[in-house]
Length: 226
View 1 (cartoon, rainbow, N blue to C red):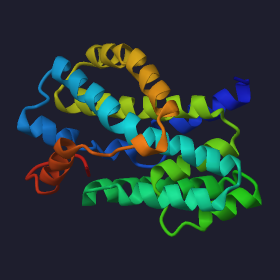
View 2: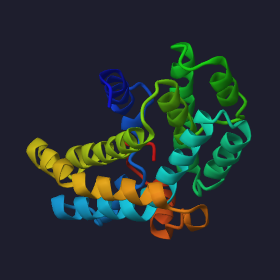
View 3: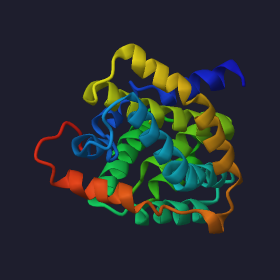
């Protein structure tokens, strides 16, 4: 990868990117409250299960398709995958999360003047913009290779999950970094799986996670918005 593309990727994957990712746990806080996640071993199991059974089967392959559509300036494909992703958010919290972060990232990208006019027109034509759509736009606009952008997204998601565990299990900083390092082969495997998954095998079926999200909506005390 060229240095410029690598720097762009690091910026997109940075936890300091102002899109509010730190304020979401994606159901993990409910799992902490219920005792499903209670130490480093159960934290790793939760993250690995979510990675392979949820993210790699839907969010990651949708991101791949959106990047391909933006690169081809295929407005219809972008609109279709954008709509499909939003429709697949099966709880109010998950929907609000992706729309808020997608809005923040798309607003930032447009204010920075990323992409050409054709790309920006496609993005702005969407009624609502979830995070994968905004991320795909930014990756294509910044000429980040698709495989690298996919890994960056997966790492950023995993890092945020680990940070939730560091703060809330709680895990020590060293334990958190050890956990994140141990996830490297899992992230690589998830990326390979997402890249080769055909359309008819995409699935967001994760009833356990959906139940955790719905329980979190009415959780008495919480730090995170999802």
